Amino acid sequence: MNKPFEKGKIYHVFNRGCNRGLIFFSNENYLYLLRKVKSTYERYGVGVLAYCLMPNHYHFLLKQKTDRPLSDWIKTLFNGYVQAVNKQQKRTGTLFEGRAQHVLVDNNAYFVHLARYIHLNPVKAKLVKNPADWQYSNYLEWIEKRNGTLVNREFIRSYFEKPKFYEEFVADHIIDDSDIQKYLFE
Image (cartoon, rainbow, N blue to C red):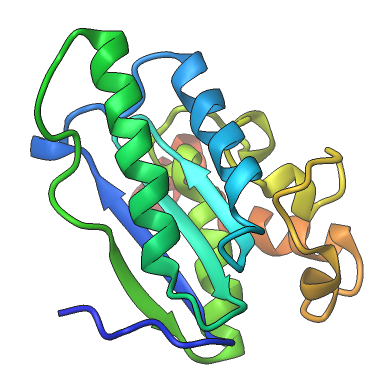
């Protein structure tokens, strides 16, 4: 069971589609959700640190900046998203496998490894070869190659002095299929 959210804490928030089905049916769905995130997160006292939207699930690293629980924002954001998608897709019913899950991120090492894990999701799913090629995460903001607003660069610099250090940290965990074959047969 998820523990209550607390002011000043960082959380990994995630959910997936019902029966592992799609939650994003088109590029416009991804963009719609990102516009909703941008227009609401500050009002709810949410700090967006890292995110990745995948075809059938999502990950966010969020900081609760006020006494208002992150769950208020998550509920508002995704209830509105489901209503819009259901209307667009001419469908009814649930889109997600229940409520969003969350895990407290309570140490620095866990935080940086989790950010890398989140940003590498599209690579591990074989959607792209490099996380920089997936437009529905804030990896490009972390490495300062896109000027998006869903990022806290000051917070990132407290972990990685230069963007290239994070880029190298992530690249160290990208193994392509030919590398895997090489390791298996050596």
